[in-house]
Amino acid sequence: MNKLEQQRREKCQQIRRMGIDPYGGRFPNTEPAQSVKNRYIDGQEGQHARCAGRIVLLRDIGKLIFITLRDSSGAIQLGLSKQLLAEQWELVKRIDLGDLVGAEGALGKTKTGEITIWVEQLTLLSKALLPPPEKFHGLADVDLRYRRRYVDLWANPETMQRFLKRSALVASIRAFLHQQGFVEVETPMMQAIAGGAAARPFITHHNALDIDLYLRIAPELFLKRLLVGGMEKIFEINRNFRNEGLSTRHNPEFTMMELYQAYADYRDMMDLTESLISSLIETHCQGPLLPFGSMQVNWARPWRRARYSDLLEEYAGCRIDDIPAVRAKARTLGIDETQMEDAVVINEVFEAAVESNLINPTFVLDYPAELCPLTRTSKADPRYAERFELYAGTMELANAYTELNDPDVQEANFRRQLRGLSADESMARMDEDFITALKYGMPPAGGLGIGIDRLVMLLTDAPSIRDVILFPLPKPAPAGQMPESLEETDASS
Image (spheres, rainbow, N blue to C red):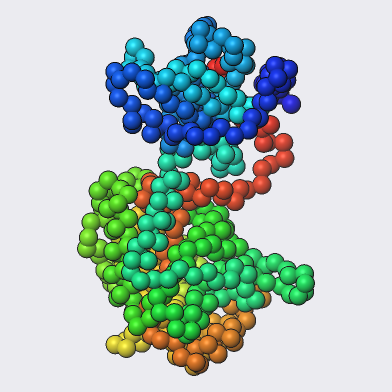
């Protein structure tokens, strides 16, 4: 136990000896701090307020203490005077930064114009035994902000605002889709066969049945079963799990919105995607030009629509059907293409040479069919699949298909994809039940997946996916390198 924690524990014991529970009970009928400030009428007598929150700033000037109290809505100043709180002054002198308190009193303004609750009754609700950091952003190990999100949320108001905005964005997505006639559904998170995407799954074990199961990598095959069942417009917002690497754009556990619409195709999905995201920007953002790191992303409609092959030629300088040129380009990009199939080499070159140029929202259309085993091929040219990916800020944001509903073609695609896969890769077993479902007849449909975490990154200017996930998966801390508490200078001591 460090010195600062020991000092706070001593104060806690002193408070108990005063007959006060330092972890007090309910404090009802509170008002959000921002609401109090909004309703304040300058100069009007008889205004009162009752708030609860955490102490994030404390200035002790003897017989007067000023506190900044923060709740989820914002912050408000408390004024504590020895004259008003004579019977509670011994308690007041033992409160610290980070403590949770309830306060009630007259509402007024200081000489500097700060709206202030002049506290007539103070209630200690929770004594903080660990001090907050003096400057949370200044910590040498910024990883602590993710490991201790419970501190980050109240120590950094912008963090709280980002997650409140995330919640509002997801609520707006649901409202938009409900308005369009979509029904929200839930599909299994544990699956006997990991399917619907190419990724390495997490494996778990069901003891009662004595079988291995997989945390889902995608809900696609179950959502399509619902199309077979007659649910024509469906969506799901939920978690996917992929046993792969960590980066600023990848977390093993992430949130996807996936939807399917019967009797539609990928062109309908483009229109829906553009309308949905544009509505979010109109409601939650300040205009269509938004910063994202060092970039400015212009979300003004209409968005660019460009064929995969045209973009490859524009930015990589090679035609998609000139395989020797594509392989030569791959080598100049440092890609070892010797053991790769042609379609894979093409896509590696696309990712390396094209994606970094796609700053403004761009629909990339018509992918090589070999890359798209669940997608209907183009009737005009079966070498290409009716698939798009939406890019913005150089990131893939959405993926959509005209869904393949021919059971024989789907089975053949699965079998071709299975060749050469190792046992720990996804889709290493055929989902026979999905093929059976298709044999009953699945309507032609369009399908769309949008990465919620990446969308929030783009609309809140978050540099890392870890900034928009409340509890991202942390890397194991080296032994002996995690501090017992966060370094600080305690202004209340």
